[in-house]
Length: 191
Image 1 (cartoon, rainbow, N blue to C red):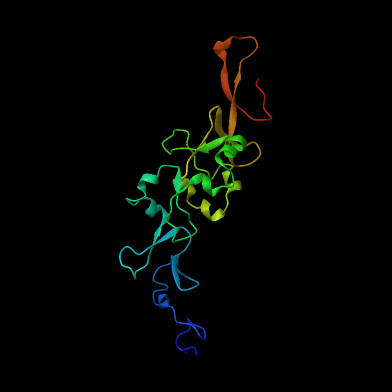
Image 2: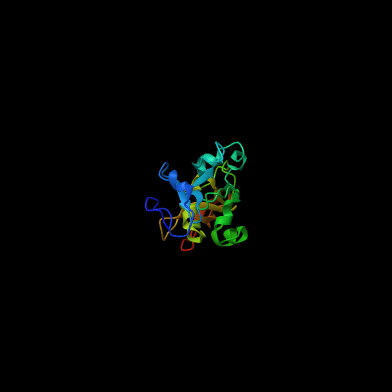
């Protein structure tokens, strides 16, 4: 029978001792089955003591000695499962493979040190994300660039950025010395 003072248990179950620490942190959560965890964007740590649960932001975890080597623009931790600390490739959070990204969007993952690198948030990539919760903070970890021959520009039809092809445009009355490379949208022609 349920103890009148213990509202954390229904009849026939064992009380969950984690309810004693509930509320000590805004990011700590108790999941079904009396499993400790954290809200999205945090990872569960028990390094300070096996019975003490700390929720550390994904950004701080990526700066730890074990993971800082992966903080290069190609990798990120999932925001969703607080106990999953496996580093994943940024492109794995999207429904497109790298060849599909190149063929459809003319972009690819890159090192954040690349001069033309950009975060995925303002690009076309969020339309292909598998779980929108993964977009939170993604620009802090993931970098992409336009493939060779393309440049990042504002879309003609929306507020997002897209990779636009550079076209060689040579005015008909001049020689090759006056050749210009300009962004070329589908509705635009060389003039």
